[in-house]
Image (cartoon, rainbow, N blue to C red; front, side):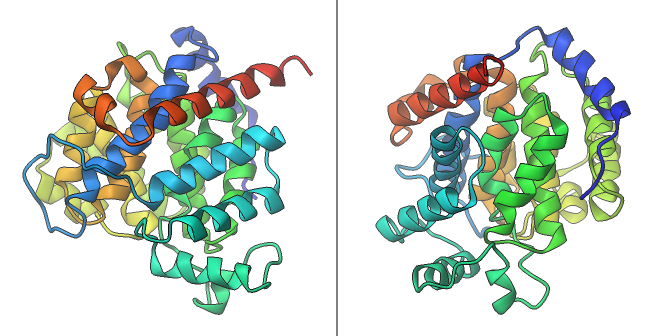
Length: 324
C-alpha cells in the first residue's frame, strides 16, 4: 500500500481551510446526485465514437449509480467499511435490477458470489489472470471520497478495499483511489477559485508512480494547450479501462467552469460515456454543490429524493466521526 506522507496532508489541508466548507451538505448531495445525472446523461451516448454535446438526461441511470448508492448505503449503515456488508449490498442490488447494464466481468463476479464463492475479493482473477483493470470500481467510489475527504491515508485504504471486491488489478484499484481523491479534493475546493495546477499537483502527490502519473501530466498539458476533443480522447482515452476513463473524467471537470459544462463535455467524448459522465458528475457535484445542477436535470433524475436523503445520511455519518 502506497504511503501517503505528511507533505501530501499539508498540501491538501490549506485547500480545505481556504474553502472553509468543512462537512458541506450541499457538496455531498451534489456529488451523489451529480453521479446519477452524469450517468443518465451519458447512458444515451454510450459506445459512440464521439458526439455533439447532449443536453437532456435519459429516464434511467445505470449500474454506475446503483453501485455508488450501494457503497454509500454500506458506509452509512456500518459507519465505515465492512467487506461482507458492502459485498452483500452490491450483489443484492445486482439481483434486483440486473438490467441496469452491468459490465460483463462484474456480473460474472456477482454471480460467483451468489453461488457461494465469496472470500475476500480476488474472484475476478478466475476470469482475468491479473485481475480486472476496468473502471467498475472507480465509478462507484465517490462515497469513499466524500466520507474520507480530509483523511487521504484512510481514503486510499478504503478505496482499494472497495475496489478489490470485483477489481483486483493494480490499475483498477489505483484508478478507484485516484477518483476518490479527486472527489475529496473537490469537496475541499472553493468552486469560485479552482486552481487547476494545485488540484492536479495534489493528485500527483497522492498517486503512485506509474501510468496514472503520466496521465496527470497529460491532463496539465492538455489544459494548458486548450486541446481539441480528438486530442483529449487520443491521450486520455474514453474506454472501459480505469486508466482510460478516470483521468478523462478529471480532465472534463477541470477543463470546464460549471457542473453542466463539465458533464456535457464528458459525455460528448463518446466511448464509455455513462461511466465517464458519472465520475465527472461526482467530482463536479462535490465541488459546485447541489445548487449548481440545472433544475431541468434535478427534476428528471431518477430517485432523486432518495439519493439526496442517502447523501445527507452520509454527511451526518461524517459529522459524527468527530464526536466519537
